[in-house]
Image (cartoon, rainbow, N blue to C red; front, side, top):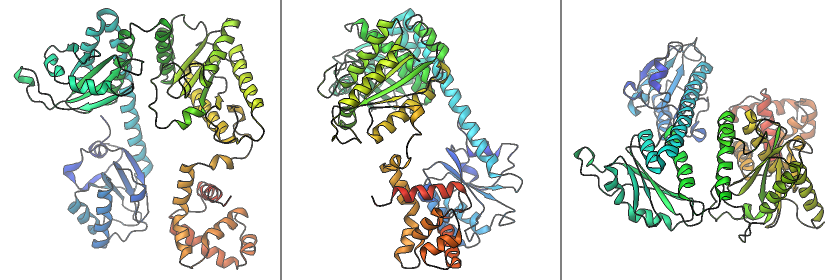
Length: 555
């Protein structure tokens, strides 16, 4: 179970006391967040336990506290933790009354309990729940695989229905029910034929959630209150079959793992017209997912002797992306394992050519190589120092040399290829290698390069990496309050921060640059701290401000 306010209250080491909202302690807690802002709502996502000492609040003002608590409730905050013995010896009655009026659980945090202890308790509970879900998911995957091998699709549906505590059904291309489990689910599944047919009109992979259709004759199941997920099966653009999964509520993480495993297994068993190569691509993708999920032993078991010693020796991870893939935002992404194609559908397009280069070089040298289409990307796992890696690097160098000198570098065009290459790694750190390759890919894209190795990511300036909408949005948000202050003509705080940071906090030098007295600059810096609610003594704050200034500087 995920952490709840009740579980935190019952945590013997935290010593929390409930001051309001005793009847709402069973709500899940997504995170514990500390904020002394007078209005932390813009930084809330919902589901948080907010921890405060009321440093910037008039916690004894009933009207102020009612406004404060009401905004927290509106933002989805599930609880408020108030530390006593810091700014207030007791929880102010104004805050208690506001919490009771708005139905917000209010927890008193004793002086001896640091906020960090609460954050750790929430984090540990979330991690334990995620670990349980992942472990249960892999157990379900093994059970589904075993049932598929022994009893075929019917056995898989039975195991899946048990895993999700519901029912499952398999449809053919026409929408007719092929098999269902338990037996009573056949009639329920038949009423979804029209929904399955509509799903088939969408490019694969596709899914939808439906509800109606009635229930079986068994009185125990006559109420049509289940939630049904429909998933297309197959690797072609037109799905050949579909899977329906009915449950009483939305699927949890472990159940989601089971459904995804069932989809992969049913795809392999129902795509009888596909070639052996296509089936091999699915196995490649499954092995890659297991490696990225931190299950190298499971990956070796599934792979058998397919890849020789590739999964035991140091390898490099390559992630490649084409310009056509980046610019084709409106096109549905292919399923993992789909043949690599360019914008025109040519299987020997930009990514396809790279796949052929890697596989050809590996075949000539007797190496094993794992090549997996991953959505709009291509992932290659090859032996470190081997022919496949060298061939991919040489291929990238040839493309780089063939570029016209006047061609715009950053972003790339429809025909461009961008490659990220990880540092040498092993199976236990496959996820880290994949992240390194993604980071190198991002740097290559920003620098207008065809290929960047992770060891070279730190080369050059970091400033070009700030040319991103998300970074600019963060910078604008961080500096907005200061700019609003400056707009009123009450002092040039943004320029003052820039001068002070550029002079490494030297008051006299920064004041001279601004043409003001150092005491004026000190006053401005105090105003900056007050407006931001953060201390300039914190190096992280100074770093964020400097990057924000650089990211928003005129070009």
